Length: 370
Image (tube, rainbow, N blue to C red; front, side, top):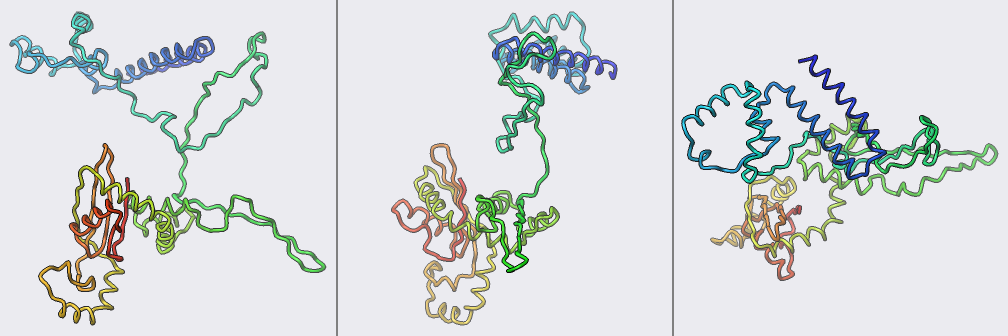
């Protein structure tokens, strides 16, 4: 097996060299077709080396899966069933005649062959890295129009198909830039002259993107502030949990209008789902403790059968309501936390169709995502 793999590797090297030579002579369409054939051949050779690959799998990949036939669904003759059991018991052992019959069968019954896309290798292509930084590297000695250093007769030109190298590197979720501004002091009068910072530095320590990244880690991927604090500390860019909260709270005010628009569109959805679960909010718990004395007296005076009519301070339950609205194939998820339960929060959301406020309770915390 090792010797066979070495031979395949040599053949692939030869094919890659041939591809580079053909790239200059073929059109872009012809080159793409030729490259697809070479990639398919490379993938098949990898499957052949894999001991777990069966003949049935290779047959399905090469010729596609056949449609549902009566013999497949109901069951065929005994000979067909015994042959199927024999194939399952020994999928690798075949004869040259079997291979010929297998390769010719799909051609004879072409109408029953279902076309399926060829499976890829599972790796991400260069086009998938949309957030990567693009760096253009020019040739160190040649430019378009220079004579060819190999044949010394032709001229080189731009192929418009550059070689792409993808390199991934580790970095903290929030990076930091430190600017050292030079200071010059006059030895006579003592005046200090400080260099001006670059124009794109800004006047705030925490950029707007820092708040967005912190909010995405916390509410988008579920990374707690304490865990992010430990990660940032280990990577040399400390960011305390309390500071993270201050950054996110400041950015939340800017995103308030976006959330109001999401609520308005969710209220006009075709189907709306809602549910709630218990939650602990330290701010509300502390407020309840401070207001316990007068709240108890107020609750005694305003006892009613409907708990929704009681003052907010009398209600000790805390809930996080999830509202999911679907419209035109899109989903909008809203999360509202506070003393109100799912029915009350859903009622407040539906009020937005009339232009009302999303929530009458000022203690409700809101998060939305589309």
